[in-house]
Each structure stands twice: as C-alpha cells, then as structure tokens.
Length: 104
Image (cartoon, rainbow, N blue to C red; front, side, top):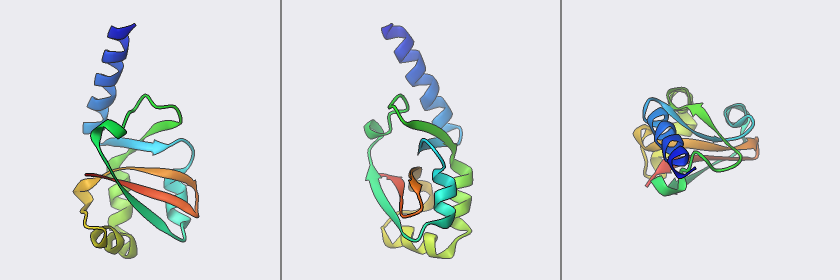
C-alpha cells in the first residue's frame, strides 16, 4: 500500500510539472471567468497534495493564459508580488470565492 501511494504521488507530481496544477473540484476555471473578486494565496509544495480529497488537475497553461489575457488579473497578480511563473493552481467554484495559488 505504501508503494502504491509513493507511485501515485510521483505520477501526480510528474503531471504537475508537465503543465497541470491543482484546482478545487468543480468549475474553478469557470468561476474565474465570472469572479467579481479574486484572492491570491502563497502555498508551499507540501500544501499542494494531489491526493487531497476535493482536488483535480487543471491545465496550468490554460490558467496562466487566462490570467495573462485578463489585464486586471495580471495586475492583481503582480501587485501580490508574483509572476505568471509562480502560479501553481486555483481553488473555488463560486464566482465570489476564487483563489489563485502561487508558489511561495
């Protein structure tokens, strides 16, 4: 069982480096498109556990493209002190509660 968990974590981390990130289950990317406010949160690699319940993989390149294509989001990200390269995920399924996760 321990070997299975190690393999699953390694596989998930491999996917993450291939352009995927964590997103809260549901429609976090859809919520981002209609969000009235977006928060930013600094997370560590340990907090980005792909085996946590309620998380799914999201295309990190699409997330970054959406942020880059929305000048106000990009300005908020830069004001937070982060860049597009720091973005590692997104949480939230409600347009009033969307958080973009940045690597700290």
